[in-house]
Every structure is written in structure tokens, then in C-alpha cells.
Image 1 (tube, one colour):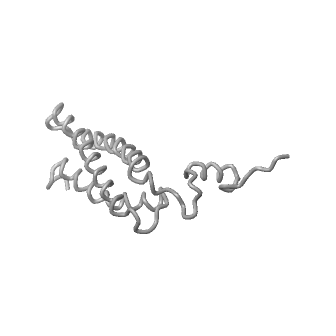
Image 2: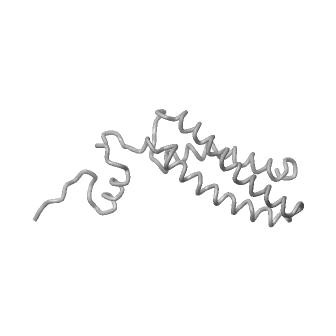
Image 3: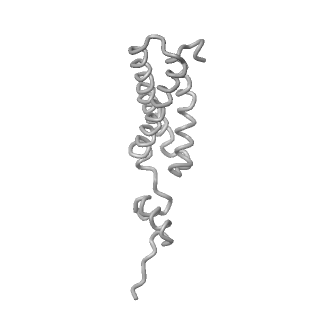
Length: 134
């Protein structure tokens, strides 16, 4: 794609192609949200994150090309890998704190955070179970 679209164009297409699938996969597998409730809101917010990460990765390319108008493909690839790692962390933090922040409760949940359920499960204590006094 780089030959036809240039580095920035190929980067934009690659991020766009994965944005919808990434939001859907994170919705289901990472945050455990099923069904259609909030689907449109989640994908719209995912699209905004796409714009943010595209700006981040294209900004990295812009800086590179400002420093070296004709960098080697290896250097260009290294800059994109570093920028995409940063974009991945940014995307995850944004999804956790903004996109899916209100959709983490399981049906019948008492309102406790998903973190407390996770801690209870890790400690072998079922969520909501009380400890017995000795």
C-alpha cells in the first residue's frame, strides 16, 4: 500500500481497517460487553480514538520526514512501530476509562466495580461472599 498511497496514506488505511474490529473485539473480549446496548456510542467513541491515534502516528511520520526528507524504509518502519505501540497504549487507556467505563457490570451485579469482582475471583473468594468470623 505504501507505494500507491505513501506512508501516511497506508498508515491511515491500516488503522481504519482495524479500528472497527478492534473496538468490537475489545468490547466483547476485554470488557465483556455483549448485546446491542451502547453499541453505537462505543463505536463512535472508538472512531474518535481512531482519529487521535491516526494523528499520533502521522505526527510521528511528519516529524521523521521533517528531520530526514527521504528516510530508509527500515527507519520509517521503526518510527511507525514505536508510534503504534504508543497508540495501542493510548487506545487501551481511552477504552478503559472512557469508551467502556459505564458498561462493565454483569447482569444482576450489586453495583460493585468489576475490579472488586476480579480481586475476589483471584483470591478464591466468590464475588459478594462474606468471610466467616472465627
